[in-house]
Length: 130
Image (tube, rainbow, N blue to C red; front, top):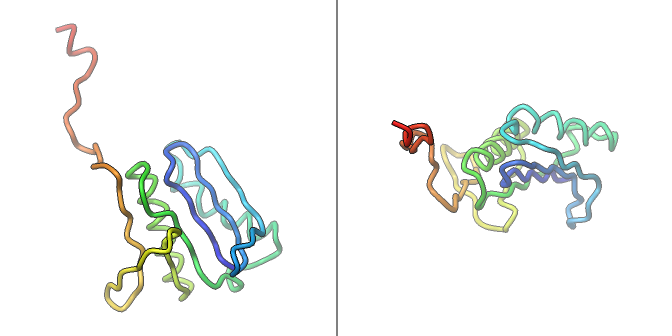
């Protein structure tokens, strides 16, 4: 079984369980506006319980790793990499791209479509009043 993680949209996330051939077993989509970190692992565990499966039945993890919100995408990719490492299973990007090898471990690298705006100075609306 494969766990699929998709957090590239800012306000929604999706997790799924798939067969090796890509056939969908179960899926869950949920509102995750800035709450991906809190909701992602519980959603995966919920799907596993719903299908009466366990983490031992998971053979690989697939994750969306391109585009979308910087933080949302980073949370999905980091979760996929960490879970794959902990379970000792492969992780791969959903688009079929290559993984990177770091310290003997295969990881998926997030590929952002824009620079993050974390820490950038932004014009505040009330400043126009001064």
